[in-house]
Length: 339
Ligand SMILES: Nc1ncnc2c1ncn2[C@@H]1O[C@H](COP(=O)(O)OP(=O)(O)OP(=O)(O)O)[C@@H](O)[C@H]1O
Image (cartoon, rainbow, N blue to C red; front, side, top):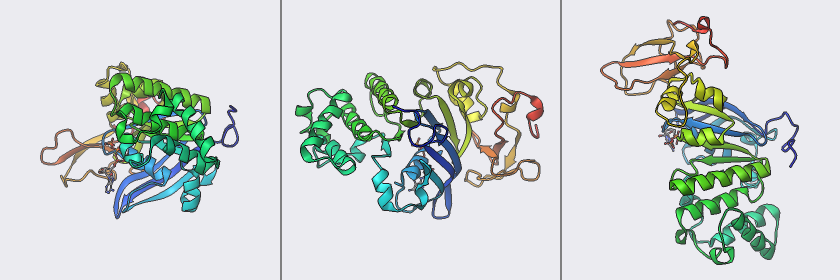
């Protein structure tokens, strides 16, 4: 398949610009920006509640009731945020698709799985019933479901977790989408099934030259699956870089902590000096995670690029550190601000 899929060779297939998500007045995701190129696999890591799923759901236009998104989601140059719901429906499962952690919530419990895969092809490829059924069988075989003639008649609850996840992968890849968002696709599976699923996902994404955004907590998974990593913290993307550079030289304290507790990678003790928190201090405990820089009087950057690190054990006042993203190759202590 051509590497110019989705437009010109140097244009990203997905370009997210300043994407924010709110629940009423409460900001949950703050001005997130990133690009995905055709065939690129990007890992999105971050602690629980950092905004990874909301980011993916906002890209898909699938945010739940009460949540609103702002910003731009450019898919092959078209801004999905300002397009119609009809157009978004046409693209979901076709141009962009999503694989969820728990397929039971995404699959229709009342429809046989063979028909569910066939429906994707009928809707987006305009296939007749018989052709859709034939292709669905091929797709089931492609995701390691043997004897599709037997299994196509099963309902989701009659399959194992691994088989359900394979059905969802078959549906997500049926129309060879340019972008696949996978939210913890293997977390609910046991280890052996997990590694085969990841292998399948990598193979299909490569065959279709799709861009993959893989959300996971698992550093071993992300280091094996991703060319590049984005780290989210408190609703911000606080760090990004190639998988190797980010894991060898993590700059944000969250990434460092994750790397330090993982067996997947070893931490290079010569991490750049710019990786250290810039300003530390305490602010009155409000029970809320501070959303802006708490050191406006001292912080020379005090802007939207500041990121804050919460305390591990808050005692009385909240101890926080303000941290500034540093350029990819910053190793020069002079680049430290306010240290
Ligand atoms: N419908 C909602 N209304 C209000 N707050 C929400 C809603 N959905 C999610 N949140 C909050 O938004 C924040 C980000 O949630 P999100 O699900 O994106 O986190 P996550 O990084 O994917 O976490 P996990 O790894 O545990 O899935 C969390 O604090 C969560 O409680």
